[in-house]
Structures are given as C-alpha cells and as structure tokens.
Image (cartoon, rainbow, N blue to C red; front, side):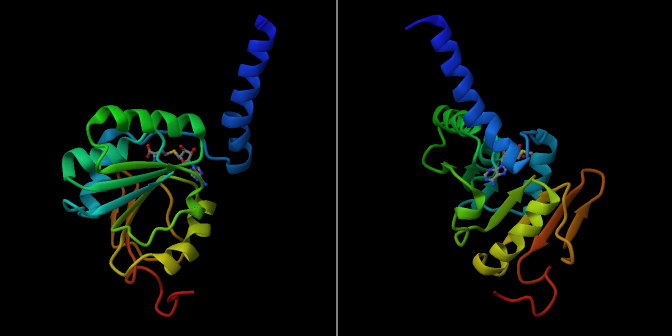
Length: 181
Ligand SMILES: C[S@@+](CC[C@H](N)C(=O)[O-])C[C@H]1O[C@@H](n2cnc3c(N)ncnc32)[C@H](O)[C@@H]1O
C-alpha cells in the first residue's frame, strides 16, 4: 500500500467520521470540568444503584465519576465515533464495566425510560428538541441536570448560578398540563 493512499484513507476516515457529523449536529466536544461534574452529581442526589444517562457523553467522565464516587450505574450516548471509542476504552480500563455502558448513537434514538438521572451539556436548541422525548419517556421524579442551557418554560428546582447548573425534576418542573405527549 502506498503512503499517499494511506494518508488519503486516514483523511477520509477522519473527515467523514469525526468532522462531518459535527457539521450537522454543531456540538463540539467541550468536556465539563471535574468540579462541575461532581456538583452536577450532587445536585441530582444520585444514590447507589440508580441509573444515570449522560446524553453526549464525550470521554465518559461523568459516567465514571457517577460509578466510582456515587455507586451508580451509568449509560453514555455518543455520536462522535472517536469520542465513543475513547469513552469505551476508558470504561474498559476502569474496572467499572459491569456498571457503565457506552452506546454509539444518537441521543434521540435511545430509550430513556430506565433513567433516574439525566445529565447533559449540549445546546439550547437540542434541549428544546429533547423536551418532548423527556415528557414521553421519563418517569416522574427523574432528575435532569443541565450545564449552561435551560429548558425554556420549565422551572428549575435548583440553580447553581456560579457554575451555571440547572436541576429539573420530571413531573414538577414542566408547566401543569404538559403531560405525556
Ligand atoms: C459539550 S460535549 C459534553 C461532553 C460530556 N457530557 C461532558 O460533560 O464532559 C457534547 C457532546 O455531545 C455529543 N453529541 C452532540 N449531539 C449528539 C447527539 N445527537 N447524539 C449523541 N451525542 C451527541 C458531542 O459529540 C459531544 O461529545
């Protein structure tokens, strides 16, 4: 195999699997710092054995912290194949494989009905698009912690203004009558 062929193949793989999806989703990877990760988990009041979903899990740091420090089970969903592999690898090496799972795919295609806690650091328009899915799939009492972006028209149960974290509770935060759609 010639060098130009190998380089071209690497470029095409990187372009189509890494950069290309970002053009459509428009959400780059920006990891949440660990101080905020811990605060998010504190705000969620996650308990041992509860199930956390991190929507767009990046390198899997929230999943691993939830499992390691809070005894939770965690599922991460990641669309970017390189980040998925990174998260999968970190979980593989972590010793928490029995409690942490990483799914390669779109957050809109994953069933969230088992979630006790949702964490997310996405964009405003993605939070808006997720509302209907949350109303349909989440059980009452499920805690949702969002970094930076709020859910328009929903009332947060707790806000950390300094760290820009917002806690919502399904069944309490949305306006009365939004119900299941
Ligand atoms: C700002 S980063 C946050 C990463 C991680 N949650 C954290 O807090 O460190 C957003 C992540 O969401 C992923 N993402 C964006 N849209 C997605 C989608 N529709 N489905 C799955 N992952 C998505 C991006 O690839 C990126 O890794």
